[in-house]
Amino acid sequence: MEHSSYDADRDEQHASPTTTMDAHQENRVALEQKSEEYDALAHRSGLFLDRVDTIIYSAVGICFLLASLLALIYTFWQFGAAMLLDLPTKAADARPAFMANAIVDMVSGLLLVLIIVEILSTVIHYLKSHTTSLRPFLFIGIISATRSILSIGARLSVTNETVSGATTSVIEFNHSMIELGVSAAVILALGITLKLLGRLTEEHEK
Image (tube, rainbow, N blue to C red; front, side, top):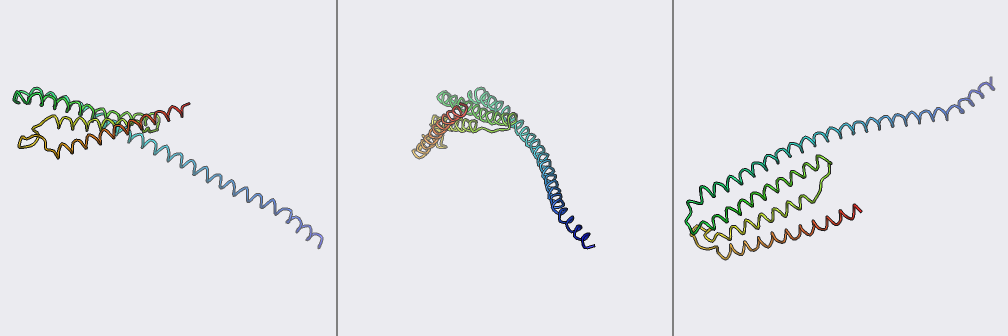
C-alpha cells in the first residue's frame, strides 16, 4: 500500500509540469484570440473612418468647385457691369482711373478663383493618395499677398477716395506702404520656403 501511494505521488509530480504548460498555452491562445479580435475591430473602425473621411473631403471639394465657378462668374459679371453700366456715367477725366480700378478688381477676383482652385487641387490630391503637401498652401499664401498688393495699388491709384474728395492723407499713405512692405515680405519668405522645400524634395527623391 505504501508503495502504491508513493507511485501515485510520483505520477502527480511528473504530471504537474505538463498541466502547467497546458495552462500557459491556453492563456497564450486566449491572448492571441483577443489580440486578433482587437486588430479586426481596429481594422474595421479604420475602414469606416477612412470612408467617412473620403465622403467629407468629397463634399468639401464639391463646395470648393461650386465656389470657384460662382466667383469666376461674379468676377466677369462685375467687370462687365462696370464697363457697360457704370463707366458711361462717369466724367471723362474720371474714366481712366475707374477703368484701371475695374481691371484691378477683375484681376483680384481671378486670383481669388486661383486660390479656391489651388485648395481644390489639394483636396483632389488627398482623395487620390491620402497624403497632404505643404506646397499648395505656400502658393495660396503667395497669391493672397499678391491680391493684397493689387488691392493697395488700386486704392492708391484713385486719388479721390475720401468723402471730401481730397487726396489720400499722409497717414493712409503710410499705412498703405506698410501693408505693401508686409505683403512683399510675405511673398519673399514664402518664395524662399518654396524653393527650399523643392530642394529638400529633390534630395529625398535622390
